[in-house]
Image 1: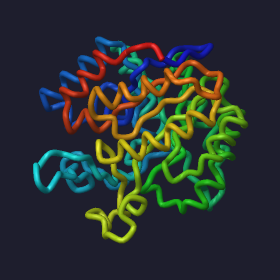
Image 2 (image 1 turned 180 degrees about the horizontal axis):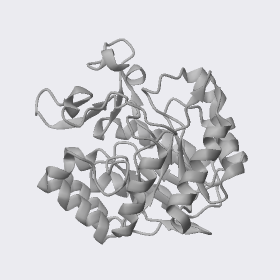
Image 3 (image 1 turned 90 degrees about the vertical axis):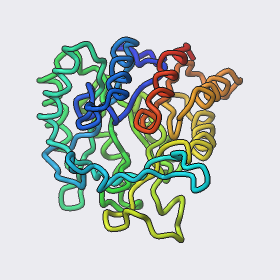
Length: 315
């Protein structure tokens, strides 16, 4: 569990897969197994980080009537079991104001939702006006419930080059820190160097959320992606767990601020592996951490429920 002066984040959080409002995503909400996960999230008072919004509506690649066009299941060729997901959503959303209104409705229904914001560039430069407007809109619509904000510093299909992304991440964080005095969370990618997270800590980010999906080019640099026509996409699910855990272990030892650690957690044993990590004597002073789950809710909803009900230990 992460404790901040203005609120708390549960020991296990759910990210992205609950949609832009945080109360469930259509058309997944038509599935009985997904409905059970949503009910469990509500009953356990699990913190949800909403799917990222941009300042204005962005069409992206996602089509709710045909989600399979930008999401592929990756299966074991021998057993047929699902190893993970490859997605190329590309930040499809209706903009900050529409997403904030959805979040307000979800909070009114009892969900504990934190908004997530992806700041787009204007003419290749940081749009500080857009940052300020986004914070103002969230604050105006959510009021006292706007105590935390995730800055999504990573999206495999955003169109940014890695070099350009790294160059602007600190500027975005500094801008958001100047406009927002609540709990600022920065979501980083496995392609980001460890030093970037240290810089984010130095400029006043309160929590590092690691990791985002693994870009296709990182896992399979010599192989063409099934979603090559959509930019390649990023992998999530159990297939990335070991690599994510290794990177998270390095980050956790280097940083002193709280962390949300994720990336492929798909069963109880993997969640408990993080618990064992936190028991070790590490060279940092923060004692509060959380773990994040996402794609397991789509690939094996009942394992997700198991994690949500059995893992809420205090780190």
